[in-house]
Every structure is written in C-alpha cells, then in structure tokens.
Image (tube, rainbow over all chains, first blue to last red; front, side):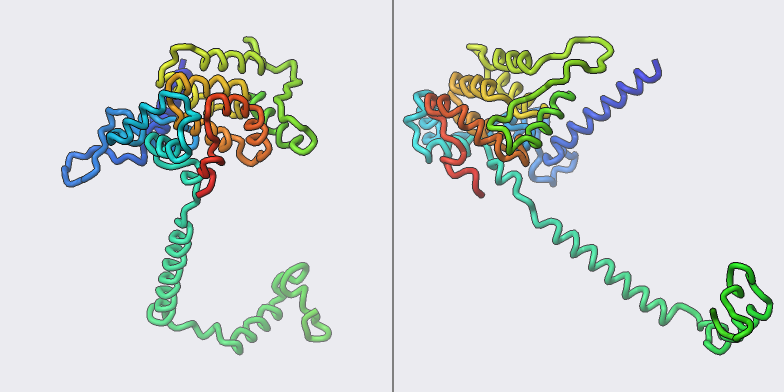
Length: 176
Length: 141
C-alpha cells in the first residue's frame, strides 16, 4: 500500500514535471501586469518540439484573406499547389522546420566565456590575497632550516625500516 | 518496450548488410509475469486502423502522431501511409509534410531509414500530391 502511493506520487510529480518542462517556454501569468507577453495557459499552446510534431494549435491563428484563400485551395488536389504555396501553408501551421528547431545554439560560448571570466576573477582575488592577506612565511620554510630539520629527522631515525630514514644511506652519508 | 530497443539496435547493426531495415523480433519468449506480447504486425495493424478512420478529426490525428512519435521506434511505411491519407481527408498538407520531417528526425543517426521510407511512400506521395521537405528545400537551414 505504501509503495503504491509512493508510485502514484512519483508519477504525478513526473507528469507535473513533464508538463512544466513542456510549457516551460511559455511564461506563467504573473500578478504584476508589467509583464508584456502573458500566455493564457488555459488555451491550446503551440510548441516547436521534436517529440510533438503536431502541436495543439496552428502557429498562425489570424489568417489574412490571401491565407484563407490558400486554405480553400488546400481542400482541392494538392498536386495543384505550387511549392511556394505548400511552404506558405506549412509556415501558417508551424513556426520552425525540424532542421531550424534542431539548430545548435552558440550558448556554449557564452557559458565557457562566463566560466573563464569567473575563474580569472578568482585568480586575481587569490593573487591579491597572497600579497596582502597572508602573513609572513615562517622561518622554518628557509632552505637552510629545512636542511637542518631533515638532518634532525635522520638523526632520530624517523621511519628507519620502510619510510624516511630507510631511504638514507648512513654509511655513505647520502640518499640511496 | 524491449522490442522497440531491439528494433533500432538491429537496424543500426545491420544497416550496411540489409537492403531493408525491417523489425526483426526473433525473441519468442520474454520474462513477463503475465499478459500477451503484442507482435509487430499487431502493433502496425492497430495504428493503420487508427489512422484509417474515415471521419478522423484533427485532434485524433495530432494525438495519434504525437503518441506514435513518442514511441522508441520509426513507424512502418504502412502506418505513415495511413496517416498521410488522414491528412488528406483533413485537407492538411502542412501536417503531412511535418509528419515526414518528424519521421526523418526520429530515425536519428540511422540515415538509411528515411530514404527507404520515402522510396516506399513514393506512390502515396505522388498520388496525394505531397512534396517531401527535400523537394521544398526545407531540409536545409
């Protein structure tokens, strides 16, 4: 019983997500009337989608007199329609052809550019930090003091079997 | 929809060897717990019957096509023929051209399916006077 309700919730969420995705291009009617293109979501909508070849309504709703006469001609044999007329009829019903719909956008350039800009700004911030924020490096970072530290570790026989001192040859006084 | 997955993969694998990308479904047994498997022929017949309704209305055509394109398969020529004739009954040449575009898009990377289907549909297209998107120059940007 539990998994049934979970499944139903899941499917409802999925269908709502699918519906939201499919009408995602249309802007939701907001309470502020400053938004210019408010879409009436209660009416059939038009989308150019690969998986919905025939959307709920034609693209052009208001037809001119010429369009309407062409629609009349469409009722007759289609062999009598010229290529231009067929294209005109197509464009009345649909906004973009499939190749136009599937055209890749140049958005990736904007995205990559944005990424690099922010990486650059971050790099500048890190540079400024390393100059103005970080305290002085401790004296133990000096090469001479580091050499003294290493000597002390070797004298203490740090990890003599498999680790640090194991790599030092005590007879010859050099690294192995 | 195993058959559907197999359908496209079989087409891809044998694209060069076969002259006709048909749906081969040699899998006789499937591990369904119950229920009958619909054969390819039954599927095709069901869809041909759907589009062959003499008084089909525009909504039914749209619903049928959108559902069909939603499946993981490229429809057979006979289903498309039935759909194009439905467009003719509805006096909608734009939808007929759109259907051809959708089918080409549906074939995806399997570039041999669409020319084959066009060849199969040529008699229907010339009978109904439907121009292909290529003839109208709509396959290019």
